[in-house]
Amino acid sequence: MAKPGKLQTFLEYWAAKSVLTGLGMLPGGAAIAVGKSMGRVFYLLAGDLRRTAAINLRLAFPEKSDEERNELVRACFDTLGRQLGLFSQFATRSQEELRNMIEPSGFEHLDAAIEKYGQRLILWTAHLGAWELTSLGFSFLGHPFTFLVRRIDNPRIEEMVDDVRTRFGNKTLDKLAAARSMLKILRSGETPLGLLFDLNTLDDEAIFVDFFGVPAATNFIVSKMAVRTRSPLIPVFAPWNEKTKKFQLIVTPAVVPEVTGEEEADVRCLTNRLTRIIEEQIRQHPAQWLWVHKRWKTRPPGEPSIY
Image 1 (cartoon, rainbow, N blue to C red):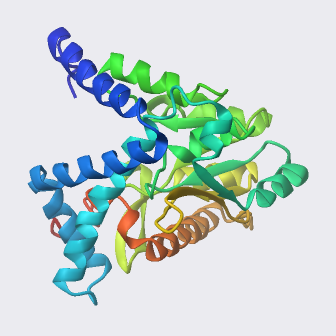
Image 2: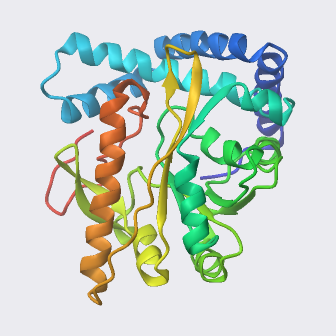
């Protein structure tokens, strides 16, 4: 993708900076509420994304009615807006203020994994709820790590976002040139490695595993690194709690790779396990996953396009 010109770069940066600064001036709860309202406006404007979400939800939840699935599409945009509101708070709030905006749980699983394996861990999540919280949250709670990102094409916006992500000691790694660096980090045990694991993947990096009963091109590199380095994987998620009006930050028990000596089979087995965990989380919070993403875009040879 071509990089934007200077004027486009400035205008995009100015728009993003204005929105984040404006929301950031509000109290946390108000910023999240306004962000949700912005998500509802975006829902009205984003026809192509609504259509993608509708297709995805028909595949994932064929048993639901059209009305139920349409409500999930609307709620997906609510989720995106709420995350924007939360992200606006990350740049200026103190660690204590940020801690009061979330509900951490399950950190005993992280402590147990660190005690047993040291820092040679993979923290992984999905595009569920406020996934940006799964990186920043760990750092302001005293567990900074290195995580993969896709750099934003606009360099000024990328610099602004990266400053927020690394504010409390995190480091970011460009996913386009990260394979050797990831292995080095895991083998050295200098810091946990964090990444997302639930989007459509290109053919040369993918194996097909069932996701909601439909074969989905799924990244196997994460599993291969875990198998080769025998690194446990810690699932973490950040769903919205409507009752408390806070985002949770949930750590679940470590997934330890099974290493039998048959690497291809071990990698497939682990990829399936991780995908099932993500699916289980989405089923618990069906309105909060990134349904606007073309998850089933890459198809097995000979299959027609879904979208």
